[in-house]
Image 1 (cartoon, rainbow, N blue to C red):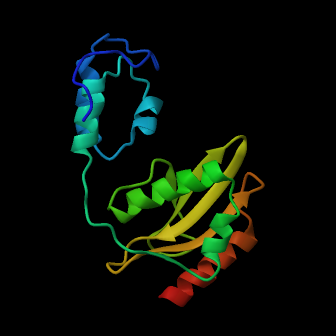
Image 2 (image 1 turned 120 degrees about the vertical axis):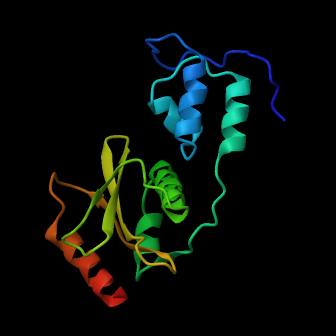
Amino acid sequence: MLPTGSMPLGNVGSNTHGNQHLNIFYMQMYPYLIPRQILKLRFTNFTCHNIQIFVYSYPMNDPKPLEFRDRALDELRGFPISARRDAGHQLDLVQRGYDPVDWKPMKTVGAGAREIRIADEGDAFRVMYVAKFEDAVYVLHCFKKTSQKTSKTNLSLATKRYQELV
């Protein structure tokens, strides 16, 4: 169990209101965020007590199974370790019914298809998936993005795997 004292864990951003209780408010509004994502929201004055409240308020929904189509798992395993971890966390959110932190719809692939956007050390990685089906979350395609626009090869491969699914 974490100590409940108010020992500061560090200054991680700027809080214009200077209100330590704002951290708890946002943790309650966004319980699906992990502490690393909360740090991106630019909070200050995290205390052991705040983190304890956050950890015990994280919802434990039953996740949908995750199913990789064709070679999507091998493609994901080709990512650097930090990008792989981030992709895994984002897919875990999707399995539990939440939206990933950074995503966009991919209507060109198929109805309900989405793309998770992952930035890692100057590189961009993408994970295309569909979660609209009740039985599972299907990962269609994973790739490193090499240009501003998604290549037709990547789009056609994801579309092909989506069509095989439907």
